Image 1 (spheres, one colour):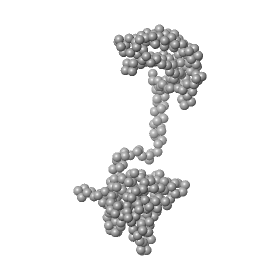
Image 2 (cartoon, rainbow, N blue to C red):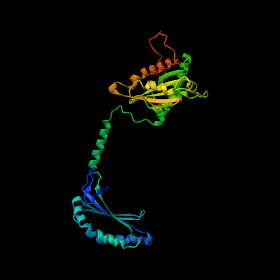
Image 3 (cartoon, rainbow, N blue to C red):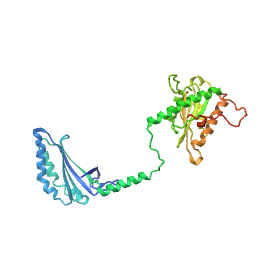
Image 4 (tube, rainbow, N blue to C red):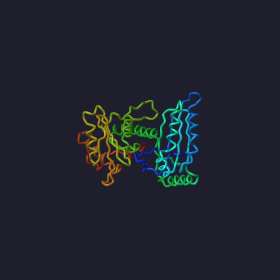
Amino acid sequence: RSQLFLLVLRRASGDLKMPFVSFEHIAREWRCKFSSDADNASLMAAQAKLEDILAGLSSIEGVVSVQRIVCGGCLDFKVVTKLTKAAFADWEKAGFAPEGDFLDALKAIPGISNIETQTYTLEDVKMNKKDCKKAQEKKEKEQAEKPKDEKPPEDPAKKLKKVIKEGGKRGVEIEGAADMGGLQFFCTSVDEPEGDVALLVESVKAMNAKSDPADEERKGGSGHIGKMVFSAGTSQLAIVAYVPEEKQGELVCEEWLAKVVGVHAGGKVLKAGKDYSTGCIPTDADKGVFPLKIREGLILEANNFLRGKGLFPEDNGDSDDDMVFGDDDFPSA
């Protein structure tokens, strides 16, 4: 039968307290180490002493079971006597007889050592077939009631691969769009990081990676262009600002990012660097702050900061629209 051993704290008064689990039985364990010398002679002697007291021990009122445990590897010899809770209290008052005589007999056996006792609860927790069936039905019901649209966690390696692929393709598109418009800095958004700052950093690095002419599909190539990239998730809007070394005299990366995340309460710079700075703005439903809702406005804010420093083309008044680049501007993304 499958049984669970639980150690219980015991007060000097003998009360057994365990508020976090219910129990109806208490066990007393007698244990010792035996020697393997002389063909386990000490073990045989201990077994003989157990047989001497076994009838009397088994006859004690309330005894449910008496178990013997022998481990040939650890050289353990144990006797575990299990009683009902009420009967155990009476047995304790009687000094756990014949415990004293049995332990004294063990002490007299050559090769026996480390004689100890312990008290703990001991409950049979094996489920019968009916209860097993109920548990399985409950589990299946809970599985069936889970939201159908709940997606299982995606493999991190596969997710990173998607992030890098999207970032590499976006880097090529940024390079082309910036060259056509004569831009030194660029602001855009990506989907795959889903608001994860660390993944967004990997996406931006993929945008900045040097293009390899030998590659069948060109990737990256926009490392010479400063950029601020946004990614909306459920819980936050992740933001990464990047300023290449040759442009750091014109623009302080952290200052640019701080201006943007400061637009909404709760926005913060997570890591400040001369080249890469990261930040986020958490979702706040009470204040109407939702990542997708605020994203385009923050891209405008980032562009306006650049415009104030003469690093972004001025609005010539021909259009009411500012230059905002998001996913819709890159059909291949």
